[in-house]
Length: 333
Image (cartoon, rainbow, N blue to C red; front, top):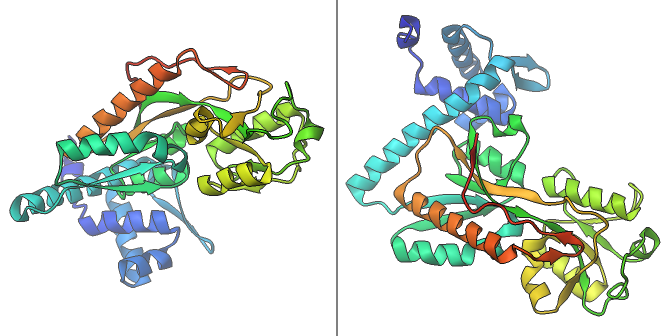
């Protein structure tokens, strides 16, 4: 290793300030987050830039944005601080027998379908471990994972820049379906057209989410115009109630409604084309080794993913033939 790097004298406060400015989007907001003054933040960032020999932020009236060099440095700063926190937590647990807490992030569309069985198995293996479950949109989960608020995430494969410093291990594909209540006016329609669909409430995930892109593609294939009126929500409870009580058409990941479909409460519409599956997998920070309890939880999630692949093999969702993914996990960075 180069001698200048060994003698760079990067301190914890440099990394804390760098990450605070990155996450808060400006020096003043970072100063408030750290409970120090803005000049102190500016001085610390200046020291770090001098040590590294690169400008890390472009400053403007709107705040501070990472430069290309700042984006390259970000995953390593995150990993360094996260590893330090993990080491301190490990010593604390050893010295004080503090309880183990595993921080799991998961898409709200997957939590009810995946976690009940998984959490039961983990409780049997680690009866003293707690699992803190956070549900949020994919982009939010990845940001929390990057800032070490989460240990790992069950989510969708995002764009390469969003996955920087992350590893992705494929579990299964999640198909999008459009559903209606049993007995709906469109229940026996072989292929609904846009004029028929437009008579009912259309419920979709919010704009900006990955699953919304699939929903938009399906709606376009149905012939619906881009400016059609929509109900946008991530609430599974609201979507289900709108379908059952308001004759809505709900564009939703299959996991959310598979139990209702199995019991005949909700029925899938025939979709106009295939190819709406989304890859679902485990996502974690490549530089941080998981706790033992987290490793057990991860293995149970893998097992559940394999079971879902086997159960879905040969099934058809609407008009979409579902092709199960290989049971052997694939790691991707």
